[in-house]
Image 1 (cartoon, helix red, strand yellow):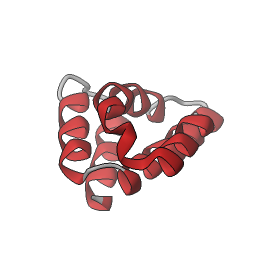
Image 2 (cartoon, one colour):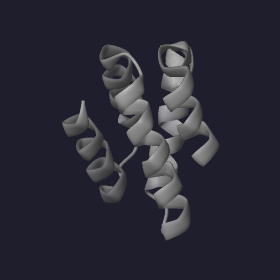
Image 3 (spheres, helix red, strand yellow):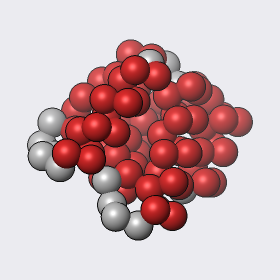
Image 4 (spheres, helix red, strand yellow):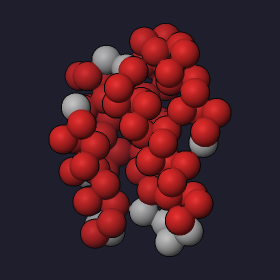
Length: 84
């Protein structure tokens, strides 16, 4: 996940086509109990939000989280929305 975060930093808008699929997976991983996994997912999500097109990121976060009912998942999505 750290590598994915680094790819967002260095490739920036070239990663726009990957945002929707990756956001869904990263948001799911950010809701896991393992702190190490959560930290990696948060790292990658943060770089995705900062590096990609805002409309694509917001759409990906919305679409990626529509079917998830975990409280942690929804909190993380809300936090990522504030960063946009």
